[in-house]
Image (cartoon, rainbow, N blue to C red):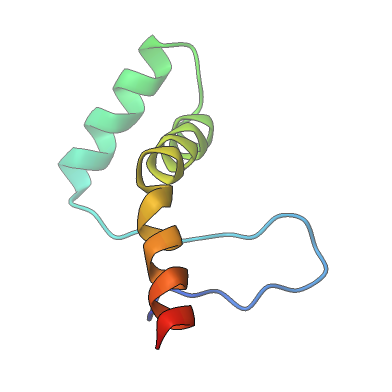
Length: 68
């Protein structure tokens, strides 16, 4: 488990806070608005893409645990 692990309860949605420089947030929200989406929509899509690109790392981790 990592420091970022969230205790999940029975609700279907959770909040996850991220620290970033103020100017980065402003630029991010300007781009999201130009794409006609909210910042939250953009973040959810980035998370989905991140998981898809990196899911093999999780599979390797599980295999390492099984082989130990």
